[in-house]
Length: 288
Image (tube, rainbow, N blue to C red; front, side):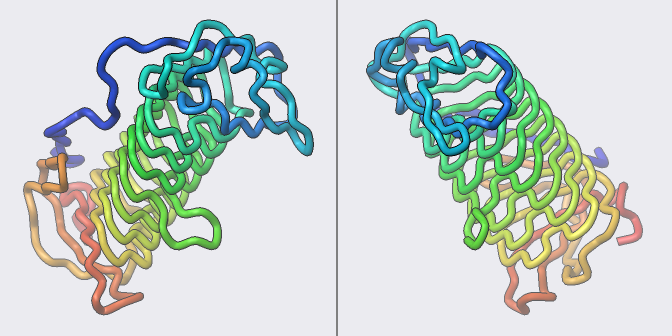
């Protein structure tokens, strides 16, 4: 298979067994200035009544407002984060920081999500049934972020001015992602069903990035460690990588990749001791 076959040895990236209480959030109106809503997490909602959840504060510009000004709040939270499911019934593209720092439980977004969804999450599961804006899963530590649509820039990246991005957990993007996916990544897994654009895996130090589709340019630039696998065409291959061997099976943690790949190491443009591994589909990149 030119793009490779992905075999997942284990599929449980979150936790949660047993009954969960559900809190439903339904948007009341169109949001003009974006909301900073890092309180939309199972950790913040757990143990609170519907009224108490509605009184939690969100930022809009320089002011704070009750969550209930923007969402109808229904249902009840569990006694712990692990027993709490939050369901957002509608589009939340103008709502930022949903699930930030969450440690357990689940969030289901029946639409798209704004910037920083899942930033710093430690555990639990977030499922977005639409697209996500930039910085999804930034500096993620654990759990599962599952994006059914497309993603913006900087998925799993380090924050501006910092060197270390995602350290653990799994991000699954069924569509495509834009620039600098996995920048500064130290651990965990990012799986992309579509394509990526420029500088995927820039400054990567660890973890796995698997892209079923193609990549534009700068793939693995300044990479020092970790693994990148690309099943499609690479438009402009980075010059700092050296061919090592042909491979037909790649194993990384819980994942096994089967196909015909050319293995490169690098990025030697930055360091002669670089240990990054880049696997490229042989059929779609015969010139490499």
